[in-house]
Image 1 (cartoon, rainbow, N blue to C red):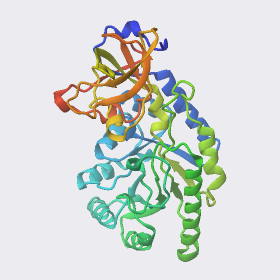
Image 2 (cartoon, one colour):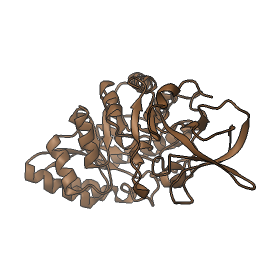
Image 3 (spheres, rainbow, N blue to C red):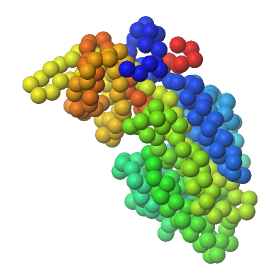
Image 4 (tube, rainbow, N blue to C red):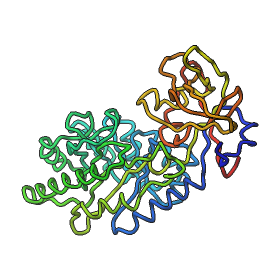
Amino acid sequence: MNTQFPIAAFKNIETPFYYYDMDLLNETLATARREASKYEGFHIHYAVKANFNPMILEAVREQGLGADCVSGGEVNAALRAGISADKIVFAGVGKTDKEIALALDAGIFCFNIESIPEVEAIERLASERNVVTNVAIRVNPNVGAHTHANITTGLAENKFGVNYEQLDEVIDVIESCNHLKLIGLHFHIGSQILVMDDFIALCSRINELQSLLRENRSIVLPHINVGGGLGIRYDAPDEYDIPDFALYFQTYAKHLCLQKGQQLHFELGRSLVGQCGSLITRVTYVKRGSRKQFAIVDAGMNDLVRPAMYGAYHKIENLTSCKECELYDVVGPVCESSDVFCKDIELPATDRGDFFAIRSAGAYGEAMAFGYNCRALPKAYYSDTI
């Protein structure tokens, strides 16, 4: 039984809901900022898609971090939270005219562009406003990350970014535009990466590309954006509550050959917020079959879709039982066979009404919740106000 959760307070709250440890969130953000500040020119932009809860964004702003956005809605959310427009980067393979116009009118720091048609759209809209806007080219480095196929994004065949062989053409088009200023290169190879070798491989590819641009085109761009990708330990949220940011930033400082004055940008999401959040749910029924028993909880895949979508693992704890452990499949009420949080998990003997905490749900939990089966979206509660 985990005693770090305020069980007495939970008894007065309708489940399921998200619970955020704000002390851990603030400590994680502060640690990342402190480790990045050890290196001149390192900047963190929080990946808003991981969790756009207003309280999360407020904490990000208070730590002085920027924002990495992939939709106009996320740009608006960052601005509403008070994050300065000149710290916002806007990525995404399918930006609409409306979204581009919003970002231009806000005066964001940079667009990360991913195709020639997007270059043309931003140039047209910037021309209508008679403004010059910064752009960086998202390049596919063809570096495979050791992670799930659905969250690997740096290979040549991904929908994202510009392939090596297209880079010269894209640079030529940008340089022909009167309202675009090419300031950098952007990369992102995937997420939930725990092996530093993947980031070292990315550094090597960036070093090669920078040498080619310098030698063949006399181009040295002032900004390099390496995306994010640093993972968390889903199997041990208490032992590894804060990722090893020191090693992460040190890896780039050691292996990436920045040119004089170049600024390095990071787009961290999961590593900043993943461990601070838990999905709290109650056991509705314990169903015993001939070979299995099921703990049927009131949270479903619509509240936390990662296990159904990726086969992702989240540690599950019974917060109210101290009995001997038994094997359970923890499942939800949604009318889909994929509505399973974990199979064959050892938990203290469970009864109707027990509270479960589904851990490490601060990233891509609340943000991806949806209303399937006409189910209400889960509410959020916070350790400093509950």
